[in-house]
Figure (cartoon, rainbow, N blue to C red):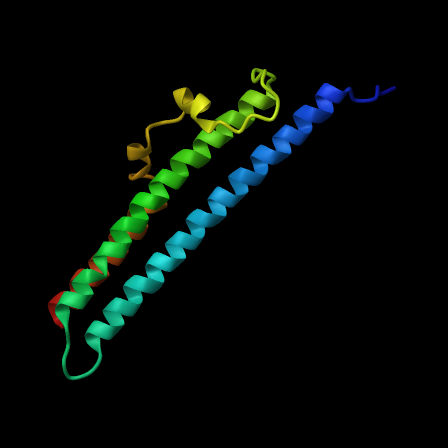
Length: 140
């Protein structure tokens, strides 16, 4: 026989849903920024290689959005990990304040955002785009 959930349990489940929604949005935004970085870098490299007046500096300029979005992706990963820690805190009942969304309170267990620069997804992605931009600059 199951008992009816109490209002505090319902509030905790609603809080978990709110935190999960934020985690999903942060992950989606990070993916969109990677897609935008690839598009911008590819456009700059393609423009640099087309026509009789090849502009190698434009291919080199394609590195800038890649590095900018690499940093943004690393920070988004750090924020996502902090929200995951907040989710765990709420799940285990250690968060007393109801419906708090302060992810900074869970930074103690999240690695610093600088370590996210080396994360498996971000580093190879940025490295490949930078290498392609350098190759395009050299061959232009």
